[in-house]
Image (cartoon, rainbow, N blue to C red; front, side, top):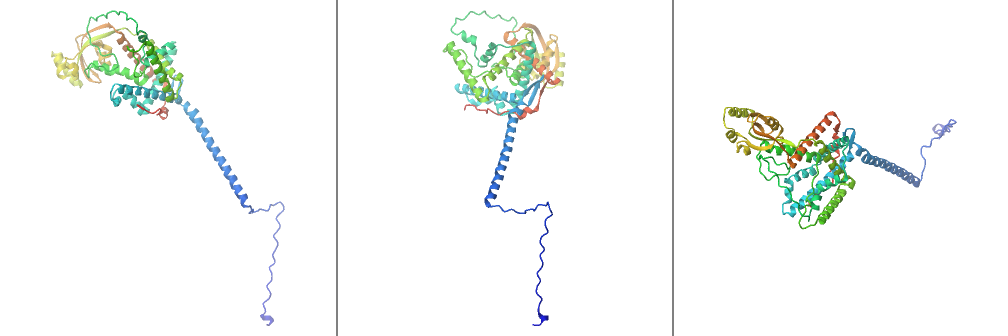
Amino acid sequence: MSKRGQQPPLQRRKVEPPAPEPEGRRIRITREFRSRKEREDAVQRWFILGTAITVGIVAVILVIAFVIDRFVIPNQVVATVAGENINVGQFEQRVRFERAVRNEQLNQAYLQFVNFGLDPNQLGSQEPYATWLRELQIPEQLGSRIIDEMVEEQLIRNEAEARGITVSEADVQAQINRFFGFDADQVAAIGQEPTATPEPSVTPTPFVSPTPSPEPSSTPTSTPNPEATDEATEEATAEATAEATSDVTPTMLPTIPPTATLSATEITENFNTQRNDFFSTIRNAAGVSDADINNYFEYLALRQAVRDAVTDEDESMSQYMNARHILVGTEPEAQDVLAALEAGESFADLAVSVSLDEGSGANGGDLGWALTAQYVEPFANAARDAEIGAFVGPIETEFGFHIIQVRAREDRELEETELENARDRSFFQWLDERQTAAEDSGEAQIFSTWTEHVPSDPPLSIGA
């Protein structure tokens, strides 16, 4: 082969050695070889560290939740009265206590219905059981009553302190006895010879007054008329106020009346057993102590003492009147009736023909003798100073428009029951005015936060 046909040999490319790193500069290792075990150990360490951090975070959250639940929320204020706070913890305890008491009372009523052969389902249609059932089924309804009661209680305690009123253990025991229907004096008299009692004096002027007792009366009453209105508004309002806002001394069922078959000792033992069973049931159901239960009865005793002090100067004399009325639906109708009377038409005939009060209308509008104060306020105010025999009206009440004629009026000594009812009305009026004034002045405030903290336990349980 000629030299021209030969290829020159390939020259090797000269590889330059890497330039040395500047002095002071580290050599960065891009990848380090680790064994499988080393890698697994590293993963495990990270897993343990992550788990520990997670557990720590959860523990902190739980501690914070515990502190909030046990210390922050219970101390939130739901109402304040004259600088005294009512907090969530107190409110929740009171609601649970009330639920436990109502449950026990409803169960006692259930047993009484069964023992008398009655349908226990009728509980839901009879008062006060129907109201109690609604409150247990609708927690907010019960909560609303309880928060009002707690404000009322603080106002009464403040009044007691201002007047220097205190109660004794005997006063508290009297409230416990009353709650269970236990009359210690009556029981102590069992087996003793009865003492002669004086004959009751006859009231010289016959009269018919509304039944003072708040319990249902078997005597039919006409509706709507001012006398029936007395029971439906004055007495019922007072009783409803007591039930809805103060719950004055509810009574256990069944009560413990003295019987001919039991001695005084046996009746007392039965009472003690029932009381102890009740305390035990409430303790377990509501999570309260005997001291908490006794505080409830202490408040009832204090309330009674304040009531007696507030009404101590109430007169034992009160005005009675003999009146008749004609009730119509509109003011023009009442004006027509008034014009007819002034023209000489018979009051009795007009009452029979046009009065909406069928009860008194059938009797010529006659209401008979009654306490003036027991009529609804507009009616009572108009009749209290009306000229005897004059036609007064039209007077508007919740029932319609009245034309009134007062035929006689006199002051009489109130009987014991009537006096107590009058004092109750006076006390409820004082309490309502006191609470309204406190709310208007900002002395008493209720905050909406209570609605978020109404317990629904213990649950409603009847006949279980």
